[in-house]
Image 1 (spheres, one colour):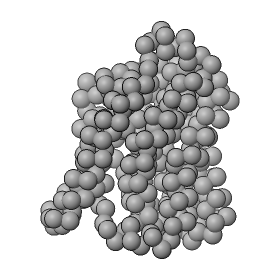
Image 2 (tube, one colour):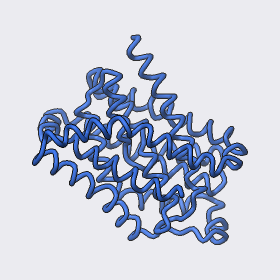
Image 3 (tube, one colour):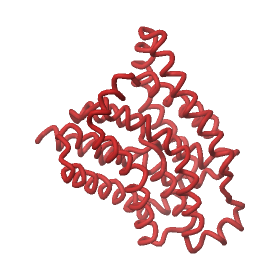
Length: 286
């Protein structure tokens, strides 16, 4: 049941991202590339590196080791645009980073997951027992169908029919967060026993991953002298990953076909909102 819900949700979220894109966003960022480059590095390199470190440090079981790496190497989530607006960040930067990371990670996810499959000490026995392997071709095809094409379709519609696109964008923006929470709830109910048994360790790992990524990206943003609105956006973009995509990859019958692999992403979907809501409240108060 879960996979029948996650795939349409992911497609709609990516279509909504395409609707919000404007050519002007990319043109403006050509004059301030530091923020864009730092955001991409944070999402593509920093967060997976932190995830690898924590997975090794806590000696996670193979299924959760791979699941933590999976959520860390996914692109930025569409909810980050809303959080950037709430925090007084650079919304154009947020939208552009989400779009670019969604495209770039179509090719980096297979690389990072391949490293994870070879890195974890208990992964070999786990893969032999569960039949887990990484069909790179299927992963690329699914990402193109569920992410790249919807983004392009949304962008084209926004150019051809801006009024209709604006109306759809408002609707999708309102339903995106409830849809993600519905998805997380369904998988939570499905795996409540396993989640209950591992929530302590996984909760700590996920929370540390969020806090460390936020802290390091904030320090890096200051080091390269980004302004305050850009710094807020970088912290949020690096911290908010596309949990729907991680769940889709884990549970898709064309890729891993293992919904238990999505458990770290489910916990992440819940914890990232808690941590980043606290961050938004702090920066708004300051």
